[in-house]
Amino acid sequence: MANVQNKTITEYLDQDYALYGMYTLENRAIPSAIDGFKPTQRKIIFIADRVWRSGSEKPLKIFQLGGRIAAEAHYHHGDGSLNGAIIGMAQSFKNSLPLLEEIGQFGSLRSPEAGAPRYISTKLTKNFRLLYKDFELLENQIEEGNEIEPKFFLPIIPTVLLNGSSGIAVGFATNILNRNPVDLVDACLRVLSGKKVGPLLPWWKEYSGQVSQVEGSNQYVMRGAYRIANTTTVEISELPPSITFQKYEAHLNSLQDRGIIHSYEDNSANGVNYTLKFARTTLADLVAKGKLDQTLKMIETETENLTCLDDRGKLIIFSSTAELVEYFVHFRTGFYSKRKAYLIGKYEDELEFLSNRAKFIKLIIDGKLKLSNRPKQDIVTDLEKLKFDKRNLSYDYLLTMPIHSLTKEKYEHLLKEVEAKTAELESIKSKEPVDMYKDDLQTLKKNLK
Image (cartoon, rainbow, N blue to C red; front, top):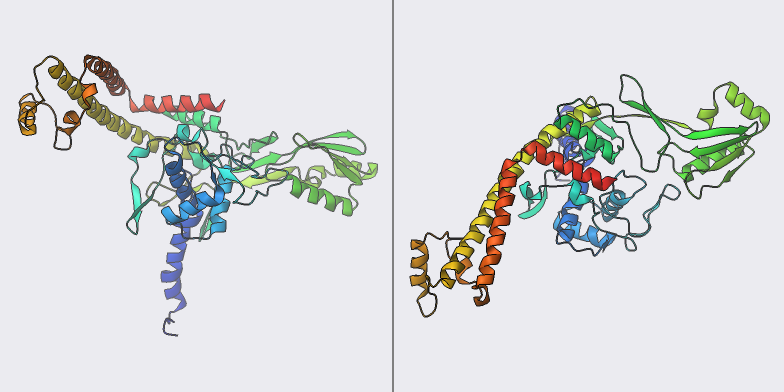
């Protein structure tokens, strides 16, 4: 066994195990505070953006999307895990705001199991491009000479708080609960306006029960809802958010087997609706001893652990959701400054292109520049004397214009384009990055209602 190495336990822990620990921390278990993703989720979005960026509405089967991710984004683990991650990002009963659409059977609180990856399909949701912005400012990583996903994407709200995240790495763990996207938008707007962020209670789309925070901690209590209809009957109208119908019915069957309840009826066609029958003395005893909530599993307690990775991929632990939101907004605002600089450069370049073409056509229709029956170099010399701007070291963007473009109508159309582009440029120049950020947040908020 030539590959066997003799090491002390200390050497193994300091070398091999330390490397493994860092790998699980940075590449598997802990989400980014910037985009909310773990690496597999980021690879999914990288390829999904590539597939549907052109505006195509055609969905892909889960196994087809998974195949592209494995091939193009250098995914190094099993197909089953990848397909499960794709499905998880689409499931509306788990996510406050899914990033992928459910086309087919993706599961529900009543039946969490999704259909097979070859039968169900997905595509990006309509809200995705309102939530994730500034792709042109990202720098993709390189693996084996191929371009893969960036270190992080750029949402406009802290998506690590949006759909929840959990994971266990060596020495660290994270447990982040779902939030209402509108609450997150409002929290970001407060930070941008110099105000403090208040409590951000967990929220689940299909849950209408009571949520409370244990004072002075990151612990939350979620309650189901029920009423005692009479001395032998309890009607349950809500379950704690992590309990599926299957789990709850298994619990009710256990209560029935143990003689705690006589029977139950499931009328949960729309929402939760269980009717439980007790012996009169049993129900009275549970109420008197304060054990009814516990017996019916109506209370769920979760301690939030806000452990994330920062923009450099280094561990960062937040003491509260408010601290995380403030960190995110301050980081994200810097990219609005970069966006402004990028757009100014882009619009100035487009304006130069349009203005040069308009000037070129005007000279031709006024008879001040002749093209026919002349050597190309002579025309190039004239264009240089007339101080036309080159693009890619040539004037081909002018000289290859089709002849039907060299008309008064085209000239007038270009003038209108120049006017519109000039207005766009001035609008961008006059806007502060913070105001650009606020505009994006307000647009997202309108589309969430």
